[in-house]
Length: 296
Image 1 (cartoon, rainbow, N blue to C red):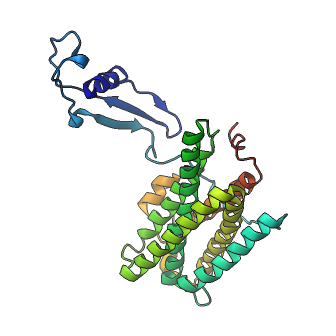
Image 2 (cartoon, rainbow, N blue to C red; image 1 turned 180 degrees about the horizontal axis):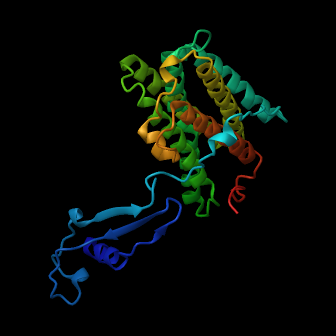
Image 3 (cartoon, rainbow, N blue to C red; image 1 turned 90 degrees about the vertical axis):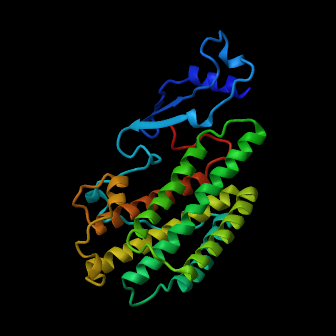
């Protein structure tokens, strides 16, 4: 049976275009069945060598990343976003939950007056470790629902997965600035992730609309956080980041020029959060069985 599967893979060893990541994926497989056998896939005693499976990714820049927007720095320099007033009970509950969650998050991350480099990094890193949870939970839940219902998801899963990875890549860029965060901080992060994952999963089972509305309001707060950080940097309150080069991973991920600065990276992160805000607001207004409104 394994040998038959291997031969099927061999016949399918083409390089289909992976347009979503602008890459080509090729799969090759081999078996130990004698070449003289007219039907090596059914040859008795043949074995399948897992080590003979080769995956290769050949493609353009950033092929290992999910598709994501890249913005002209000039276009996002003065980006602002207004908080949308709640229209009904669901949105009021979502906004209230975000307000409550932010109060606790501000306390844990030490957010307040006299912010310096270390305090901003603590907030950014803690924020992004949790911000990557909703997209992944939403995608996983919709994936399982699609399997159980045996029907198409209509484009929501890839969008939510891209959102989750985008938040994770924000974290990867900030980790370059402070790779060692200590056991206590990591334990707090894992605790926050455990709570966020389970509550969001339960919430998504009950009301996906509430969850997307929640993320919309949460991302509004994230945009506000990064706007204040950029203003603090411009005011000379974070001298360590004045003219500091952007990490190599940020340059690669956002396609920034080689001389991009840490500030250029913060502009891209803030723009990403604004996109997540608007996307989730729109998804909260869309019927859960309808086509993803951002797919045409």
